[in-house]
Image 1 (tube, rainbow, N blue to C red):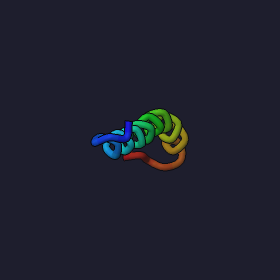
Image 2 (tube, helix red, strand yellow; image 1 turned 180 degrees about the vertical axis):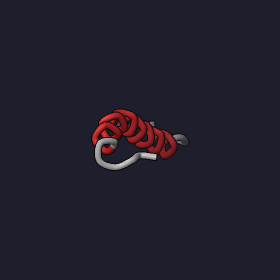
Image 3 (cartoon, rainbow, N blue to C red; image 1 turned 120 degrees about the vertical axis):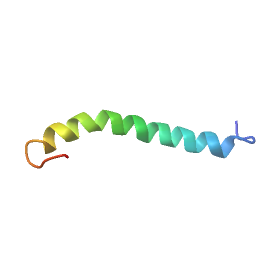
Image 4 (cartoon, rainbow, N blue to C red; image 1 turned 45 degrees about the vertical axis):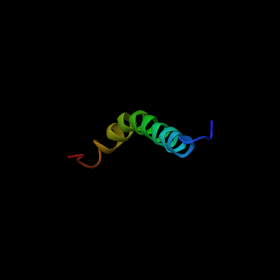
Length: 40
């Protein structure tokens, strides 16, 4: 598992987790900030 692509897969998993968390938190963040501050 920690062969040639050990570092790449580790960063890929970390990036994937951050990407999923970002997608899950964007709707909640936009619904809470749209009422107070403009998003765009």
